[in-house]
Amino acid sequence: MKITKIDYATTGAFSQTVSDYLCRSEKLRPFYNHFPTLDAFEAQLKEKSFTTAQRQTLSQALQQQYTSVSELHPAVQQNLALLKEANTFTVTTGHQLNIFTGPLYFVYKIITAINTCRQLKEKYPDHNFVPVYWMATEDHDFAEINHFNLFGKKYTWNTAQAGAVGRFTTEGLEKVLEELPEAYPIFEDAYRKSNNLADATRAITHALFGEYGLVSVDGDDALLKKAFVPVIERELTEQLSNKLVEEASAELDKLGYKPQVYSREINLFYLKDNLRERIVQEGEKYKVLNTDISFSKNEILKEVSEHPERFSPNVILRPLYEEIILPNLAYIGGGAEVAYWFQLKKVFEAFDVTFPVLMLRNSALYINRGNASRMQKLGLHPEELFQDYQELKKLLSSQIHEEEISLETQRKTVAAAFAEVEKLAKEIDPTLVKAVGAEEQKAHNSLQMLEKKISKARDSKHEQTFKQLENLKDKLFPNGSLQERQDNLLTYKTNNPDFIPALVDAFDPFDLKFTILEEA
Image (cartoon, helix red, strand yellow):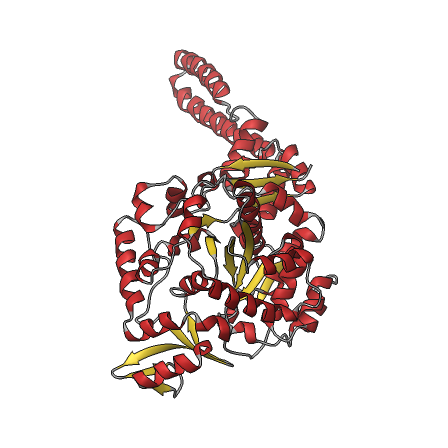
């Protein structure tokens, strides 16, 4: 496997915010804690506070959650045990419960977390580091997770279920399994044997990444929510997060960075089976939108105390929830995620919770053997592939023929010949000059037409080359986007069973470079 690393900015696929962060722009310095270097984790380790009681709660919850996995991989068993130890910390990434893992970057996030833990263990051998996948089980945007693309075809799960997607039964997914071009045992087992989508997703991530010790965490847990009660109460009574996020967003906007997320007065949902709706305050009442449910202040605080699991943080408060219930050092996200965490630092400070190191997940372009051969035949280098099609076409054109076809020299020769004829005509019969001019124009037009025909014939000769280029671009950048945003894991793992190990070997979370993997 040939590996090439390039700057993220070279790809043209990442925002100015990301580029500035990776370059350590001073403009962004107030919005994060420590920049993601191995040395920075020394301070992060000292700052992160996590009590024995918090570890016991986390361990108890995870032991219960993992009863849904029949045979735990020894590496996962070990990490679950290590989380009870005071010298164990986590590196977390999170994502929605996309069916069949959804876009490829889901896998890239997890591998980045795995490799971060590996490097931290080498740097700080007296500590243990556990990679964590935070399952967004409480998310209710089903339309974002109910489909995936495999070999250019879209597969969709249709169901009338509502509310938090993690609680959905897997009914209907058997139809998707039957539509697939072949059987995929990992997904067959998960979707046919699990009680709900959360359990199925845990089974899938365990099957794919269990050997690396990945621990999947479901925040939709009554025991874990108890630790979040103080934040829920303050959010309902003080509505502090909205003010702080708006302040940070305004500051970022002045610096030219567009806010990624928008805050609400109350950044909580009310959660029950088949229901996840926003909580709003109207006068003295707290109401659940699109329902008849309402509470007085005392009633809602009583509800929080007795049923904290019925209160679900939105995108503003979920990161705080994660950091409260995990001994976490770093959060790994895509470009938009890293950018929206910049809006949250003041919220963390207000609740006296350590802000994690923000790490950009690894991104990659994977070039299989067939596409690598096509690229080489076209004489292109991997880093050149990020140029748009027209630019690449110009590049190939310049390689195929050094100069544009032109009959200008011939036009000058013909013009000189007709000038001699015109001179002779004037001497013999001046009335012939007009006829000479007409014939000269005809000759000029003929040469112009021939120039176009020759040029077109040359282009037709190379039309196959340009078609190969177009096909290569479509394969490597589906819908004009990065692979990782469109393609699914199975598109690559089907033909290369060692796809995940290859990524594990290639990704370095701390080099802050875009990775190109090329099959030899």
